[in-house]
Amino acid sequence: MSCTIIVGGFFGDEGKGKIVAHIAHQDHPTVISRGGVGPNAGHTVLVGKKEYGVRMVPSGFVYPKADLCIGPGVLVDPRVFLREVAEVEVSGRIFIDGRCGVIEEEHIARDKGSEHLAKTIGSTGSGCGPANSDRVLRVARQAKDLPELAPYIIDVAEKVNQAIDNGEPVLLEGTQGFGISLYYGTYPFVTSKDTSASQIAADNGVGPTKIDDVIVVFKAFPTRVGEGPFSTEMSLDKSHALGIQEFGTVTHRERRIGTWDGKMARYSAMINGCTQVAITGIDRVDPTCFGATSYDQLSQTAKDFIRQVEVDVGHPVTIISTGPELSQIIDLRKKR
Ligand code: IMP
Ligand code: MG
Image (cartoon, rainbow, N blue to C red; front, side, top):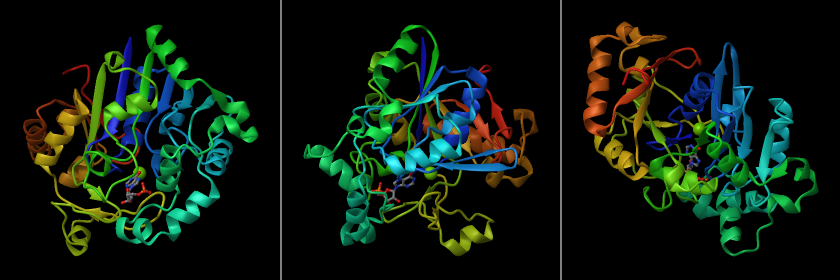
């Protein structure tokens, strides 16, 4: 049995999508299932020259041999889902749990029209907050209530547990990041659900005894979109001078950039039950490391940074991303 959860350790957009895609190609999971809030998440995956941005389809879709699932805890926007299924051509191997809550147009209007959500919190406007509140009020519709989703509906929890019990490798994808967890993040500047590894397991109906590994993904220079505290934030002028500028996948807002936060990383690793660390953006610590595929190719500056991450977090760094492409990665999992 081997079930691995992959979650974001900072404020989201750590590069989980690429890590999931890489691990999938290495470990050959039969099932990749998504947890997390809903289509407020945006995953960018670069394969060769082609860039994909998905919000509902699990980012592991680039690995063609796995079945793709959306766990019962995740909100589904049927419009976004159906568009993406056609775009990335995953029809026939993608499934939704019938119990998923549904995002209606009205939820999006409420999200965008709310001064509190849209302005104070800086929500993504994807309707997730209002839909989750309707779910809690027990008035939301479920995926199984929509005829257009009927071809995709299964019991995802059952499928995922069966794969685990058969000893097949399974990946559970988290979305968002630790810092915007409803419980552990910078409340009220957070998303509408917990985002930690335990939640991702619960979103898929997988009990804690069935999880073997939790990979927490941190980016060397953390980012945050939307409002809220960000203790290591630098000015945009400074990040631009460092050559760092990013825009959100969903909202296209410019992301706020910060420096490495060892204290937050350690706390995040604790709550997530981290067993391994993946670090992305090492080429920003030292541009000479861009595209490196082995540890020996890294400069002393990069190696020192990785060592510091391990001291701060208290767990081994086993995956190092050195650029946006799928192949630009160092995988030390077999060595450590
Ligand atoms: P909501 O989840 O759309 O309600 O937005 C609440 C807060 O979480 C805002 O600050 C968003 O920018 C942030 N947020 C939600 N999803 C993501 C994500 O996938 N990546 C980064 N930030 C996110
Ligand atoms: Mg994202």
